[in-house]
Length: 119
Image (cartoon, rainbow, N blue to C red):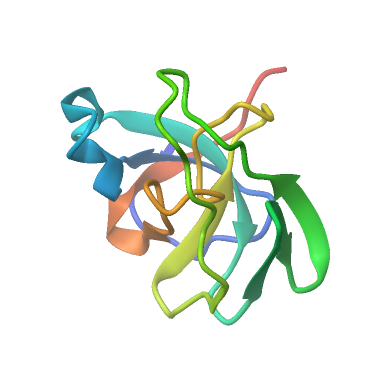
């Protein structure tokens, strides 16, 4: 793992401390490290059609309708990714990631480091 801040690129695997609004409903997520892939960079356009999420016009996934405990999940709102933020996504279609408002974009200061997965 490479610790500390540095320029992230699309496709980097990162570990970050979860800070999304879902911490209210799921207190166990507070500070929980997550492992995800950087799919969107500052300045990229996030669009949503139905539940299909795209970055700069390229589909990156479909947002589920409900969490594992059957609470409804809202997809991320269409936006331009602001400076110092990243759109991240897990390797599974069931991953809780930036596709959802309750997870949200990841701020640069949340990133603990980058990793090289051994798949």
